[in-house]
Amino acid sequence: MLPTCMELVAKARQSVNEITWQQMESENPVNYFLVDVREPHEFAENNAPYAFNVPRGLLEFNIQNHPELKHLSVDALLSSRFFLLCGTGGRSSLAARSMEELGFKSVYSVAGGLNNRP
Image (cartoon, rainbow, N blue to C red):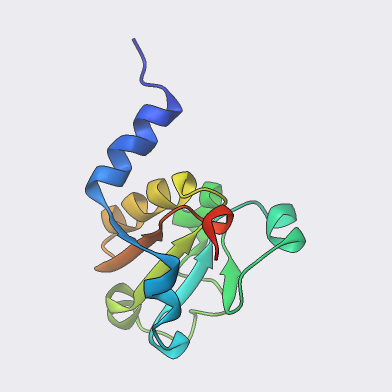
């Protein structure tokens, strides 16, 4: 039997780092990149300050070449801190796992996503 999408998300959440909104907001935005992994139309409707959009479905293809990141060397890119955001935390957990598989060293999923924003 194939795993359900919720089972895949649960498995990803067990293996990735999560950060709460409160923890993220206590940090200086110059110390991390906030990546919204929702679809462009979702991002256009509602987004968080300092966030830029890289849809989860294109993340592996576009994260290194995004205009916000192009100035970084590969080493700097891989060692930068990334906080990933979606609506509920599911897609950001899956995206965090993908980024870790690509070699990113400091990736966090924002727990609960935009729906959990204070």
